[in-house]
Length: 219
Image 1 (cartoon, rainbow, N blue to C red):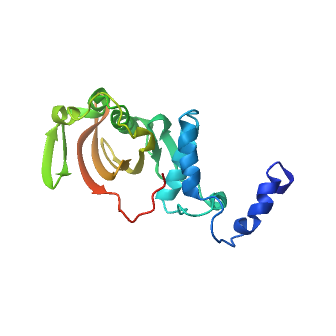
Image 2: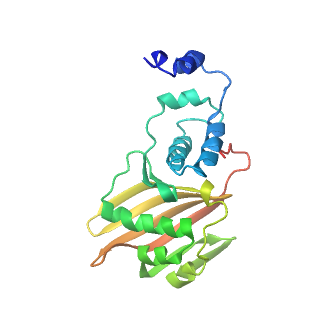
Image 3: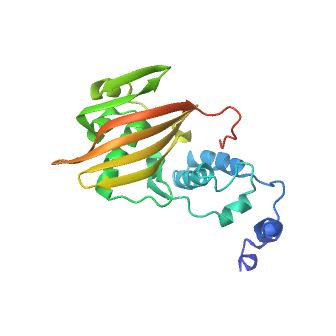
């Protein structure tokens, strides 16, 4: 059917790949991600497409050096939750909108550098704990907010975040997130509580690790 459309030439050129023959890529997934990043600078709508491509890569559904034709058979990698802040839901993850709301505010704080978003996401009594530069740290909300300058990071356009799991048990919930921030990948575990003002993050613990030097990077 596609061969009878304006895509006919491309289909004929990619037929072997579409039928699973494989081989070296003519145009790799990593190259498409790079082009979409350049396009998104002028056309913000392209950011969502790039986010979907990166989500497929993160999920292991497609390799960075695979030909773009392989994207035809990739299952939907999840859905965009907050495209402007490059936040998506992993495949199969569902949760009530009111539970996801503080997660979106939390990510907005990272994306914009505005600590006001974090104050909207967290309870005033919240703590953030993890290992930073080899030392265990435990911050109150004021200390955590002080890390943000009010400006987005220089590489914000290349950052992305995923909600990997959400479990709701009555008035409490847990969420697991992965944040790809420059040379580091953060694994966040968040405890949420439903208060009279709505759902808020009560506490956060995180793991921080460097992107493997020998890993394929989709840039």
